[in-house]
Length: 299
Image (cartoon, rainbow, N blue to C red; front, side, top):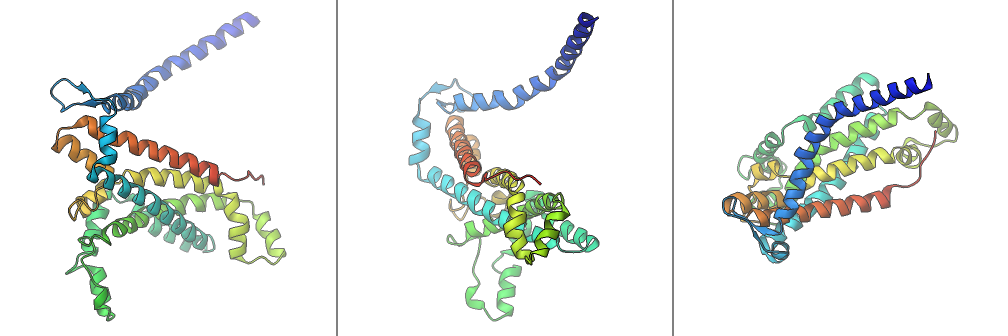
């Protein structure tokens, strides 16, 4: 009897594994094979047509010494860190506000804050291209209307402002995600912890920083990691808003990779840039997990 039960369980497990094989094979083919191939190609010089030539670490050395590649790496790191920090802080601020609003009004505000996340990146880029326009843009017209004409400028053509403008767009687009996930985590907290803190005379800001924020830290960290990867991959918004300009001032790694591979026919060099930015993201994520992991709380 026991032998028959064991055989039945073994058959079920094998059947389950059999159904998982197609999904696992597709995952390996679509994700891991290109990843490994990209790593191998980063050590080669290949134009997409002729036979690839092994060049060792020359592509990596070129990525760190070439002015355009180095600038694109710096811009990607800038966008990744500034946009992630800004969107997480803004999302937490919005979540803290919405958490204290009545249910019906809160649902409306959450929808308004989350709508930018749902918009395609290309649409967002086009929208803010008009917003930052030096002649007809809303920002410059607003500054003129309040008598601050001296502050108006060509925001996307100015080398000192263009990257900050793009970072603000990323913050506007991604802060709604942090808000929604943080709000969901806050709703999962038991009401008893708020009641006990109220009895002790704690104000809402004190509750948020001393009680709520430590408890939802894992959710905030997860959101920050996801937002970081999205911001490091910024291509659509930058491409639509500036195309990498003025000149190469707003070049980021994805734009430089596309131009290197398809405009100049150097796929190996483009692959090396992709590997470098991937390693940078992994290192930042590991550092974030170590620094912000904190203690685990039970409630």
